[in-house]
Amino acid sequence: MECATVQTEQAPAADKVIDAAISDLAEGEKKWSRLPLTGRRALLDRMRALTGQYAQEWVDAAVRIKGLDASSPLVGEEWMSGPYALATSLAAVSGTLESLERGVSPLANATFGAAGDRVTVRALPTGLYDELLLSGFRAEVWLQRGVSSAAAKANAGLAQLDPTRTHGIGAVLGAGNITSIAPLDTIYELIAHNRVVALKLNPVTDPLRPVFEKIFAPFIELGVVRVLTGGAGIGGQLVNHERVAHVHMTGSAATHDAIVWGTGPDAAARKAAGTPLLQKPISSELGGVSPTIVLPGRWSTADLEFQAEHLATQRLHNGGYNCVAAQAVIVSADWPQKDQFLAALAAALDRAPGRRAYYPGSDDRVAAARTTYPEARSLGARGERLLVTGLDPAAAETLYSTEYFAPVLGVVELPGTGTAFARAAVDTANDRLTGTLGANIVAHPDSIDELGEEFDALIARLRYGTIAINAWTAVGYLTPTASWGAYPGHTLDDVQSGIGVVHNAWLIDRIERTVVRGPFRPAPRSILHREWALSPKPPWFVTNRTAAETGRRLAAFGADPRWSRLPAIFASALRG
Image (cartoon, rainbow, N blue to C red; front, side):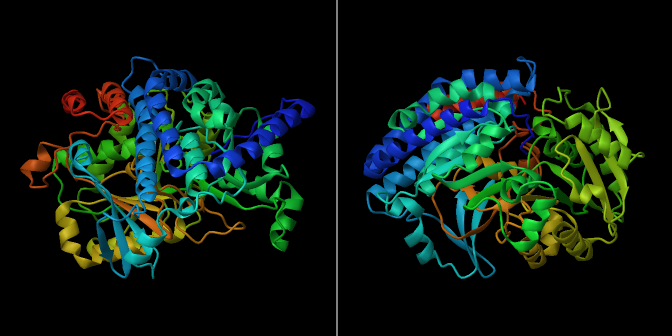
């Protein structure tokens, strides 16, 4: 979600800054077109090393931006969603270029499968390191209907299948929440689309510019990346510059529409006429109202408490300022353990560590939700978190259509159990909630077994870009070989959660979605119940006590994988 920012730059000065950056990039594009895959891979590898070198500086800047206590376990969020995410992605993209350099498809050794009438590609695990670090977690990329494994292999590589053919200058409007979004989107523009990039940071993250310029130094020196800061005025001038060929943004649908259609009465007229103000292509990753469907089952007390912490994490990670933060929990009104689960959820929300509301407008959005839902429970040390119950499944509830981008969580109760409830929950997620970025399902293994083929059919019916089963969709974000973006089919005049995908380190063409699966229980309870997953409480949980140490060690491993680093990672993770 991109915040509105008052323009403080003098227009002539802004023009000069943008013109200079665009001029540099135009020259850089010529160099980029002549740089072979070997040279491009060397730049990625150098950037990965720099990510490790400057990871502490990156995290320190993020901690200051977000007002975190430097000694808090919550700092682990910044290690994992910042340097770790970028380092692992750079490694995977480098591997893709190495395959292409040898004339081999990036999917030559991929494991293909089927999900109904769609071909799937296993994206996690991709090797022994994944098996050890994310034991029990799996991810598949589903291809669009009609795409065969042979076609997927032939087309993997996207624009790098012809690296000499570049596609102009791209403007990337970075996000202000997760700090790896902007650099990851920049790399995707460079590699997947063969465009040189003017990256404009969100004002919230402007303090990261110095460290980003250090990390991007190999690409900046070549002239294929420029990093810009400033308010909305700079962004507006950049995207409308005559030499910018394409725009990619991460933010809200409202910001997207302001860029594409403008604002005020004229914007509505343009949208009705189909004449956008922005006369160039735009791709986007936007938010929405993400659901978590809880299938009724027979849960132990430990199961109830663990999954309550899981859902609290889905809402409260990064303070609730995630495009894919859960906002609507869909539960069965007839589940005998419903009240016990909701009590555990309220307790988990209440006792989760406190933090500053760093994202602009957060308190106002919580206040607006409190006005709309005066019966909502105020939780947390300052009452800054809202749990909204009693929502009408059939009504046009504000919570269904407004992405609060703040610690506000709603509970939707539907009648029925088993197949009837599961089908109704999927219909509610598809038809009642705004956006298609991510959906979560929490289900006891026995419940999944009881549904049988019906469960697979329900997954196929969910229209979301990432679906997580007994995991959070953010695992898909952290998986470089998975895709990240909205469900395909949105248009400029009904953009929902965006157009196009990012990450996708294997450069797969025509992706429909990513499906992530995780263990219902953490180790050792998972082993005792024959789930065969060794993962303890995940380090991204807001209640994980050693998340900062584990995250720091993971980031170091991502930048420079060594077997010798693994024991310390495991030791820290097991103490979480």
